[in-house]
Every structure is written in C-alpha cells, then in structure tokens.
Image 1 (cartoon, rainbow, N blue to C red):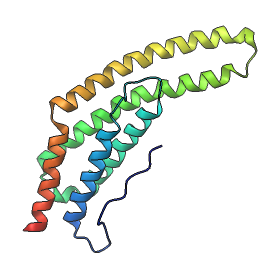
Image 2 (tube, rainbow, N blue to C red; image 1 turned 90 degrees about the vertical axis):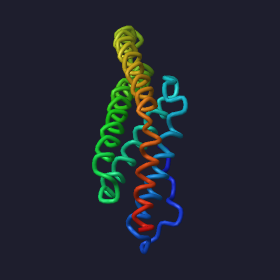
Image 3 (tube, helix red, strand yellow; image 1 turned 120 degrees about the vertical axis):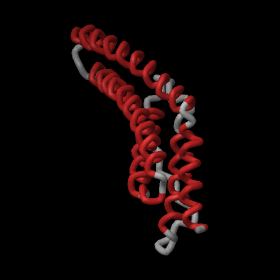
Amino acid sequence: MAKASDIPGLRADTPFAQAAARTVQVRARELFEHSADVLDVTDIERVHDMRVATRRLRAVLELFAPCFPPDELKVVLRDVKALADALGARRDPDVQIAALADLAEHVDPADRPGLQAFSDRLRAEQREANAVLADALAQAGADELRTRLEHLVVAARDQVAA
C-alpha cells in the first residue's frame, strides 16, 4: 500500500483552515497520482492504492468540513464516494482472483479445473467492474472533480486570509 505523503508545513499551531487547505491539496494530488494505469488488471495494487487515497481524502474533507462551503463539499464528497465505490467493486474480484491463484498452487491438480472455472467467472466480474470504474473516472473528469477540490482548497485559504 502506498504511504500517505506528509503535509508540508503542518504543525500543531497551524491554523485550522490553513491545515485544511494544505491537507486536502496533498490528499487530492495523491488521489489523481494513483489514477495512472488504475484500469490495468495485471497490477491490482494500483486499485488498492487509489481506493485508500479516496478514503484518506474523504476523511480529511469530513474532518475539515467547517472550512468549506457546505454545498460544494457535499457534491465533492458524493463524487469521491462514487469513485471509491467503483474502486471497491473492482478490488473485490481482484483479491479473489489472486487468492484462487495462490490456492491453485496447493490443491490437487484434479481440482484445478473447478478453481479455473470459478476464476473465469471472477475475471468476467472484474471486466465488468473495470468498465464501471472507467465510467466513474470519466465522470470524475467530466464533473471536474480536480477543479472542485482546488476550489475547496482556495475557500479554506480565503478563511485564513480573512
């Protein structure tokens, strides 16, 4: 799992709104960094890392909610959750397929065709979930999630300046 980045300049005496701006900026950047090649089913850790990034981002958005315009925050949280749900749906068959591959190495060869049949069904689920994830990524782009997250950062910074 990818380690969370440190938040530059975050200290115990950092004003709350400034901490919000810095933290959301870093967590949003991480989310989009993890989106690279996330649809590649040969490296299932990419999905895991991006899913964890959505959890971290949602947590800080909720923690720092008083620093953001409520209507904008509500839409951003909804969209991050939709992305997280699509990532979760893709992650489940990824993990099951990997577990079956490990199990196949330890079972009687006569039992492997049954495991292969189950694995084939899971791969079909994985393809379907990958299509849903591709749609969720496209929707996040169309909805300008990155830009809306930047607006939240600016809103928090504006509180510090006021």
